[in-house]
Image (cartoon, rainbow, N blue to C red; front, top):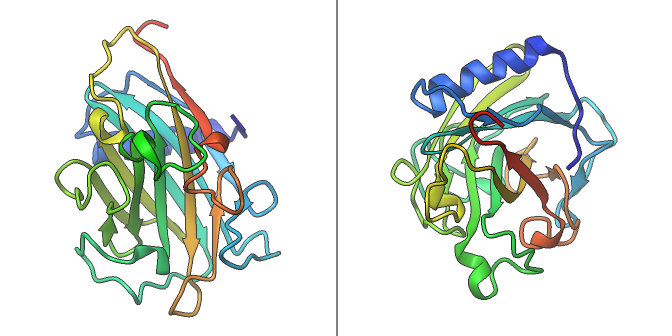
Amino acid sequence: MRRIFVCCALATLLCGCAMMRSGGGKRPVSATDVVVVVPSNGVWDAEFGRTDDRENCSYEFYLARLEDGVAVEVRVTDDRCVVDDSARGDVAAPVWNDDSVICIFDGDMDRSLDSRDGDGFVYGGGYALAANGAATSDFSAKPRGFGKEWFGSVSPGEGNATRYSFFFPWKSIGIPRPPRPEENVAFGFNICFVDDDDGGRADRALYWTGNPTLPYRDESRFGTINLKGVGR
């Protein structure tokens, strides 16, 4: 798991946002470090273009374990926000054509080379949230589950920043039995920011890690998230 440590102030700020918006104010059991993804250390989706401008798009994210699921908090920095292919509140929008964040899970950690084949399809999947609040999960374990099985919200940050907050119940990421509080939890995970600068199809997609040709489907190259149990 690739990790970059940032200052305590940033970690504290992100943690507070996730607990208030994603987890209903519940105290986290445990959390990952904050991870910073920039063009120089991320993975570009080969289906899109790329940029050599380090400041054009970047993001920071972390995951927190709550009693009833997992919160993901993301802060994206981008010089231009475009949402022309999805309407606010749409739960089946083609959000991958707009500025958006996509969270992808491999809940059973089977490391499938193609998550759409066999059982791999039902253990996790992809959840996409556009900058205007439109969403889709058609290619996930819970199709069109936005607002029901999972929760997402978007709010403006300082400067060119946008904050994306997610909450996923255990079953929506492929873990059917809620783990006991003292149990450690591990699962495969990937995340990307899709950047659309000029309308129409998105221009680029920057992933945390993965296979450039199938970063959202090749689970064998996802990162591993380890969330500790209480007192561990």
